Image (cartoon, rainbow, N blue to C red):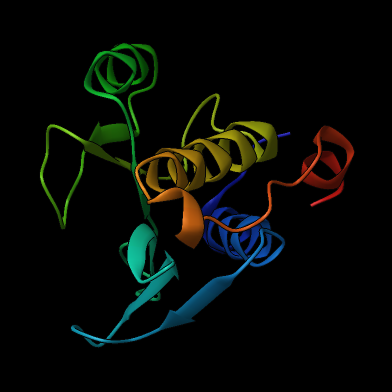
Length: 130
């Protein structure tokens, strides 16, 4: 099943909101919805129907591999292009890929937080049901 357009964005929103201690809003640019954990951005979702993408944090080596494997995955549009990727609807971009990208981005941010600021970790079954 392909995750196209609004479904890609809705899938990312649902995946993010299912994670512990996530907040969201529109702090810096109209048309962008930013998702944070402990005040740190891990997901940006566009609302523009002509520019249907999500942007997530990603380890550079993993990001380059995804960019080579999917034509609709590009360097991050809004933040440091080395550590962020943007995902648009396209061949092979599935709900599972979007869920994994959002979860991975969240984990990267949480892993860099001081231990006393980290939210409780979701178990595998909690993440799978998101």
